[in-house]
Image 1 (spheres, rainbow, N blue to C red):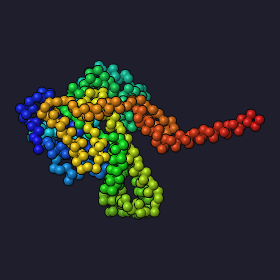
Image 2 (cartoon, rainbow, N blue to C red; image 1 turned 180 degrees about the horizontal axis):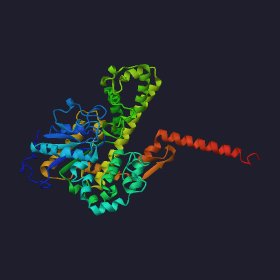
Image 3 (cartoon, helix red, strand yellow; image 1 turned 90 degrees about the horizontal axis):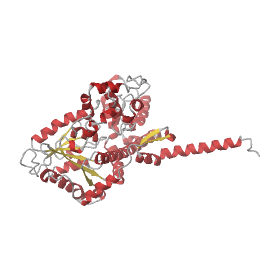
Image 4 (cartoon, one colour; image 1 turned 90 degrees about the vertical axis):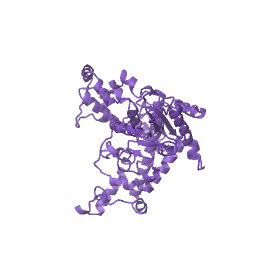
Length: 478
């Protein structure tokens, strides 16, 4: 194994950025193999892994959040993996404040910190020298007072306000609202909280010097080597389907059953994870029937049977039951989980493209498609691990900042060309004025079975209405 030699000032004769310490960041969409790659890199470098997945940081739901099992970590130290209480919001600021000392500690014993995760705002918070939260302290009192004049007279921040969530932000600050998806509850609440505490419109924080400093590649806290491991959408979609089925076999249903609470908010802590809300209707039906079939006293309402004392039901038991409604609801929940995970993959790809195109991040693109499709045992090593090792070796020892492999450059350029429209909003009237963000999301929505059924139903209704009007027209009988 090669030593990273990060602590020795003479170890890197051609340092790229004097005074900045080196870290490696492995990024990519869900299912692309980020964790696997990072662990495999330990065969070549002395490294420790810092998890940057916003759901894997929480304790619990190990199967659903796809945490690497202890036995699969091959002795590689993992940090911020399953260490945070599931009932709190672990913000990007808190991630940064906890991750920086960990990076310092890893570097102090001459190891390489490898940040691994698909949560870009965690990674941005760590490598950028400031956060939006930090900007508030730099805004002078005059600007704050001016911003207060922009507050809409009908907007209130109390829970009883007629405005809530995204609608409130849209009236308060349309520019900021246009930056985010209406369903991004975490960011919506964060923007509203920033305004409530500072009087500064969120969009103002991204203007002037702030926009120049935020996330730009020439202003990082560390000397960063970004590795983007990716695969084609077809391959990732197929992998997502298979992984969800494997999760079900591994006990996913028992996990979501154990944290089920009909009164819980799905916008806080671990309950935000994809796969929790998707099973809500199924669990509500199951609990309702179980309550009717059984009576419980206080003694048997224990944690072993879930928060409400309802016995957990196994996957095989559901398949063997006579309750067809329960089977249908379970099947629909699984389909929702797969569909929402596929949507997540597409969002993550778009965000990585945005970092590369708009912020100038030098993302070294590694295409793992062939490794996923190949049946050869060494395909992953030759197609993914070895190219990544060469990139990191160059980064650590030779000081080269760019990938010279023409195939990798070609892949990178194709990713740049595939950047889609991220900001245009589309409203689907047929689906209850549902808001879609970006041309790709809109096209995917139009192809969906539910949308097509609603459009067909509205079309038939419209045609039927025309026939009725014609029959009642005075000239219809002539």
